[in-house]
Length: 565
Image (cartoon, rainbow, N blue to C red):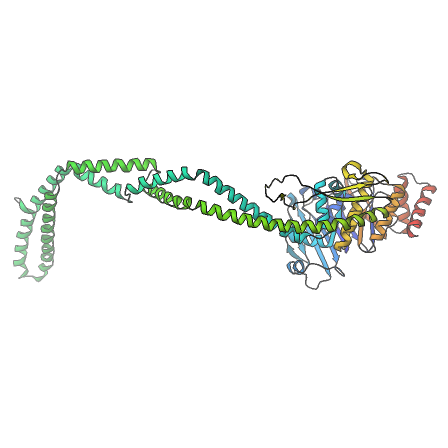
């Protein structure tokens, strides 16, 4: 159960502490006093998302803390392990909301994720409010209520796992079918590209080599003349460099007999002579090789034009053209296996749909059994809430075509199964059952919601139930009945209830009042736990508003005495 709730700097509440008890805890107060902020605080410790506007004006952060007593509460082992709760009998949840709406959560001082906190909150506390009542008017929510009542989370998640796989396979099959329609066109293009590029015999760097050869052939005469002249200057002509080196070498060879130090430059001249002779031989051979070859030059020009055309067509370079060729080859291989892939994907989809149908039928069978039990239990609950002859019919109907397009043997699969489902109800004897949206008044809707949530909570053994204005649309004798129902429910669960009705508040085991005060130019709400005398005053306020008469005070005392009876 929730033992303590502490709120600091949350909206209009500067600081407030609730010390709740087992049984029925009532929270009352004028409209706008801050009761909604208390509900927001309860939502935050149960894992609800935070918002920037929750932080009190001119403050940096808001803090909400909830201390839960786990005695007698059975948590899922994986949840206990994930939150490292061990054998702790207390859990302290803390939510801090900073400016901008960023928040962090801790459990027993250890940081935790919002997802983990939501899982813990769902096991410890369940909140019912106006939103849940409005959801009852939507037929789409009724199947979820049945599943929650029957604790079908595991079976539904297994169904959804297969459903998601079927959607993936359906998308894959459709994509392969689309590819098959385009297959021949894409194959023709890929084969044409491969034939053109493979036939071109492309090689990286070929264009550069061809350009070099073209320059040589285009300037063959100049190159040959330059080689001849250089060879003559080195070796074959008058005053050739090789002769000058020979003369210098002869003179130094004689001198070296007189001074061995001259041997060093003599060696250098030997090397120079050898190098000049090698250079002269290379130039002579080069001059003989280099000659104009118009046929070869034309061949190179044609090849360069072919390569330029390919570069323009396939990405601007030979390298990109080679990449295109490799992609075309891979595309051909892939497209040629598309038909086989399509057949395999279709077979897997058929097998998965068969699995899905089996899971859906099993889920439907469990739902049908649950719906029959829910009918009798809901009618019994509604009778305890003052509806004398209720008829409550959970009806299965043929679902409309599902947006998923998944179907098999006349079954249309959706994310929640194959069942169309809606609650039908009659509140008066002889009245035919109709949809809730057509027949339920505000008060009747409140009682239906209370009946269903009581059944669900009892089945799921949730420790703390929070009711936010469950009294909407009711009053008088029915309000007393609802109060008595909450009191009875409080034997099995801790109940926190926000109410405007004194008939309900009179049943409280502990009563808190939220009040708003204006001081020093600011507005702040405070929380007070009421003693016996203060409870009489608060009930009198709830009965008569600002008027306080002896008659109203006596009525308040009578409500308390009647609730204790």
